[in-house]
Image 1: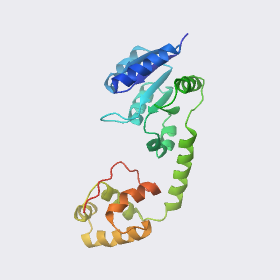
Image 2: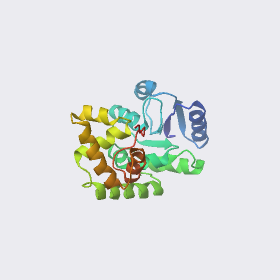
Image 3: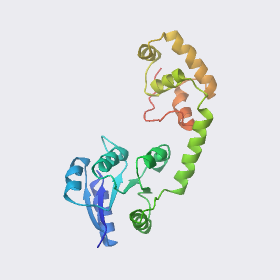
Image 4: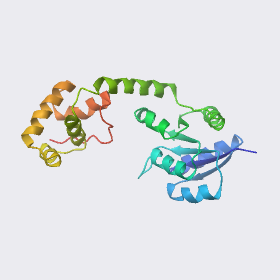
Length: 217
């Protein structure tokens, strides 16, 4: 019996092309272009592997994976992405949530097919470069764990969201002068001289998850 794969990707050409590649490789494959139809699909058929795009307009691959695992706890999921470097930062979380593998959209057909077979057989497949990056990230986090106080981390997070000193002060119920004082301490610890440099530096040091980098004066 052929293994069954469900491809979930909002880019129709990519989803359809991937489905065809898998079918040509001997798999049964279907494709959907939105997570809106996910529950209906899972309830109507059994899939051996879910191949999920990482980036959707409203959600990411992890959120979709959680929905799948809730409906089918033993699901085998591969994240199919063009954003390998972004995933290294959250690799630990992906593994904890039960993701079986990650494969680049630039990978060859041979690599894709082998990855699907490996996951079906109970193996986990993650790019070596991503694992090395994740180890490096973990080491940096450990090294900087005690570098900043909880309040300083809160200020950094609000800063990279684009909040002004006045807005940060209001959200933390402290004075603007206090924010300015702690920003000087943050700059010193980061080895920088201005708020415009904060986002890039904390991204380098993996201090906070860099979802947004809008720094305003």
